[in-house]
Length: 247
Image 1: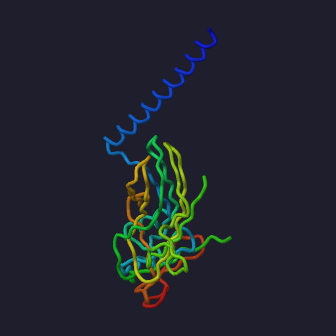
Image 2: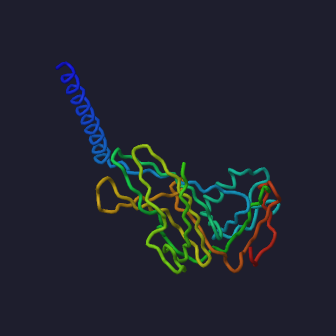
Image 3: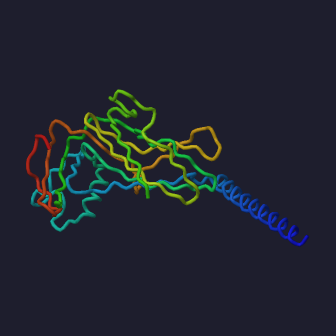
C-alpha cells in the first residue's frame, strides 16, 4: 500500500510540475506577444575585408595628396566612410546571420531570401579596392539579386533557398551564410526570414539588416568611374590612381 501511494504521489507531482512549467512557458510567450517582442532575433555581419571593391555615387576628387582618407586614417575611418557615403560592395558580398528563437514554443524557419528595397543603375562616381593581406551548424545560401528566385537558370528551379527547415526553441541559435551576387544593377536590400510559430499554418516574416540597421548594398560594375583609388598592401592610404575608366 505504501509503495502504491508513493508511486501515485510521484506521478501526480511529475504531472503537476510539468503542467506548471508548460503554463509558465506559455504565459511568458503570451506576455512577449503582448509587448510586441520579436519571435526570432537576427544579427547580421558582413565585414569589410581585403580584396573587396566598393563604389560611391558621389565623385570624390581626393583631399591633400590626392587621398581618399586623411594620412593617418585606419580601418575604422574606412568603415565610417563607406557607411556615410552609402557605399556599394561590387560583384559579391558574404553575410553571416545568427538567428535565435525568442519563444518557448518552437519556431520553424522555412526559408531565408533577399527582400529588395530599391533598384538603381550601378554607382559610377568613385571606386576603390581594399588590398589583401595575403595568404553551430552553418546553412549556406547563394542568391543572384539580378534574378532573385531560388534555382534561377537551373534545370530544376526551387521554391526556396534554404535546403531544409531550421527548428529553434527559446535561446537556440543557427548560423546562415548568405552569398549574394549582382552584375547589372545596384541594390539596397535586406534579409527576409520566413517562419512558422508553434502549430501555426500562417507563414510570418522577419527582416534582418546590418549591425547598424542599414540595408545591405550590393552593385554590379559601372562601365567607367569618375575617380578610382588604389592602396598598397596592408594600408588605408588610398590614393587617386586614374579616372574615367574601369575599376
